[in-house]
Every structure is written in C-alpha cells, then in structure tokens.
Length: 507
Ligand code: BG6
Image (tube, rainbow, N blue to C red; front, top):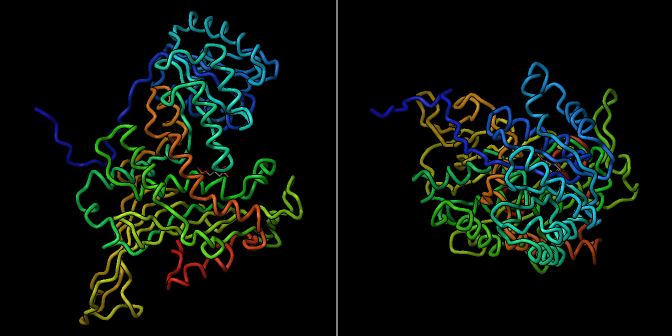
C-alpha cells in the first residue's frame, strides 16, 4: 500500500541525488570565496552524506602550503561548523589535499595532472573532475585553455569547469570569453555559476508557475499590470572595493542575479524539465527584453551612490569614504530601471528592477501586481482597492504571499486587503541549503540546468549595452545620485515609478 502524505509539515521531504566519485579542484584555494562558501558547502554535502566516500578536494593556489596546512586553514574557516562534529571533520579532512599551482603557467598545470592521477588512485575518484575557477576573472579564459592544453578536459563526460562571475564585463568581452572557453571545452562542460540560481526560492519560481494550474492562465499582459524585482542589501561594499569600483551595481547584481530572476519570472513554459529546454526559454525571453527607452536610456534608469548615514552611536561611512574607494568615484551602488519584454505574453507590461547596497533591509523579492477589477462595487478602506499582488519572497523569510481584498468585519460592505502567506520555514521546518551547496552538487553531477548557457549570458549583457555605453561615453547623462545610507535609494528612483502612477513596494 502506498503511503499518502496528508500533512507536509516537518516531514523529511528532501530529495537528493547521489554525487558520483569525484575530485573537485579549486583554483584560488587561498581566497575568500573558498573559505566563506566553497569549503562550507562541500562540508555540508559531506555532513548530509551526499558526497561519496570516493571524493577528494584539491586546493590550488600559488602559496606553498602543504596538505596539512590547507586542512588546518579550512578547519579555521569552518570554525563553529565543526565544533562538536570532530569525527565528521576528520572524515572530510582526509579527502582534502593541496598543490601549489599557477593557472597562468601552463607548465604548472601540466604538473598538476600527475598529482590528480595520484589522488585518483588514493581516493578512487576515477578521473571524475570538477575544476572550479575561483580566481581573478582575467584568468577564466587562459585558465580554461591551460587545463585543456594539459589534457585535463579531454573527457567531456567526466570533466567540467565551473566559472565564477563576472563572465565578461560587457557584451563584446562576454562573446570573446565564450569563444575562448568553447575552444577549450564543450559547452556541456562549462558551468557558469550564478549563486542566485542555487537559492531554493529562485528555483521555486519555476515550480510555482509550472506545477500549478492557478497561476499560469493569468501570468500575462491580460492580468498582470507590472512586475517589480528587488534585491536590497544592508551591507556596504565591505572589503571588496578593488573589485566593486570597476563593477558597480549594474555589473555586480543586475546583469546576473536580477536578470536570472527576471528570466525565470517571464519565460515561457519549457517543453520538458531538462537543462536545454529550460535554458532555451530563458535565452528566448532575454532576447526579447529591452530597456524601456533604448535610444534614451537615461529616461528609464537611475544610478545612485550611498552617502554617509546611521547615527552618532553607529555612523555609516559613505561609499566614497570606504577603504580602497576613489574619493571622487562615480561607481553606482544602486540601480533602478524599467524594462519591457517584446513578446506576446508581456508586450506593454513594465518590469521594474532595483538593487542597492546600504538600504534599510536585506531583502530580495518579486512582486507581480495584477490589473484592477474593472468595476469597484465596494468602498475600500484607504479610498481605492489595493490591486491583487503575488509576492515571491526570495530572502529572507522565504515564501510567497497573495494579497487580495476581503470584506472588512462590520455591517458595511467595505473591502480591505489581506495577505495569504506561505512560509518555507513553517511548511518544511528546516532551513534551505546555501545556494553553493546545491550548485556545487549539480556541477559534480554534471547537471547544468541551474547554470547559465553562453547565449543567455550574452543576451543578458546585450540587454544592458545601451546603458553601459552611456555610462562610458556620456556619464553626465546618467550621474550617480547620492542617497543616505539606510534609506531606499535616491528620490529619482521613486520618480521613475511615479511617472507611471506607481510606487515601489515598501516591505
Ligand atoms: C554577489 C555580489 O554576487 O552577491 C555581492 O558580488 C552581493 O556584491 C551578493 O553582496 C549578494 O548575495 P546574497 O546571496 O547575499 O543576496
């Protein structure tokens, strides 16, 4: 007799696939990402028993560390995570190795091949290798080429390369980088990572849309009036001025994370759930997207930069005062813009996208606002009825809300808005894995569904080309507007919506 699941609450509903024997090689092993994200994600996979016993992690960087030194540094990086889990750590640490290597030196990569063969014998990892390029973007092309030249990418079924963001800095550089990496490996071996796609709630956009019948019929221009996509952060630039100064919010968040969310929200249903079918639809919708005013992009985009804020007890420095930042910089820490998607589903529906650092709340969400009821039969609390909204809460408080009007209690017939809420935490009772846990597992499984294909990454860069060119050639057209730290960005961002009679949702 099959069991019927009547109550999904706190039932072990996790579905996991088993990763095959594997050696993951991390270039940039002495760097911040390895310690903050990659090793914790691999340790989590080990703790959840999702890594097979035949696994190895080979850290590579220029520093002359030994295996033991690497292990002890990674133990420090994990800190509290391993406290009380000594035996789990020991099992994990036995699979950690280190080899000094320099991706810019082909001879050094050639030598790496021997160490990998030795690890294959020692850990029975059978030549299954995932090379993770957590290095300066300047080495993505040459590093992939060096791996190929050393014969390390010869087997397209057993070897793959994970490439961090940013993949290029504009459309031509992304095209050029695609050419180089595709000359060294097959597209199915190239995993361009965007950690937002590893977030459970971002993947849930697909399930919500395509596993239910109640949303898809109204998911179009006939019912949806506009869409807002927000990724707000409370942190400032932190220690990353060196990178961020040449990137800014447009390249750092919009071209990748926000555009991926846009693609999942707006894409057509795929014919089946597989990597190519999904990525075809994402690429198609990005190719149909455009800035609201392509020829005059300054009319549909706002750039901002945080100034000092906080209070006397905890003052917050402005971006220009942050360590390593040029005091006259015009790099943006905030962007808001309006886009359209020229296809049958979305023609004429504005998509508003915004992101910023040093905003009052950390929050990412998608808000779909529906058209108003054609006739207002009832008085509404607050004057006019609030339009229906579907709010997809990506983080924190992962879940979704539907906002609709109900009868306010009492003898009158007034309507007022209420929210029906779904919370991941309440329904499933366990925190979602970090995005990197999911994405590292998928890369090792050779599943590229949640990674960005070459045409997608190019379409995303092409979409923002008019803006990037404007910032380069006529920056006075789109100056950075100051906003006080811990406020919701420059006033001009509110005006962008006010021109359309709208306001940003204030969570
Ligand atoms: C990174 C950006 O890709 O994403 C950072 O480089 C940003 O600037 C971070 O802070 C945000 O990620 P999350 O998962 O904290 O929303």
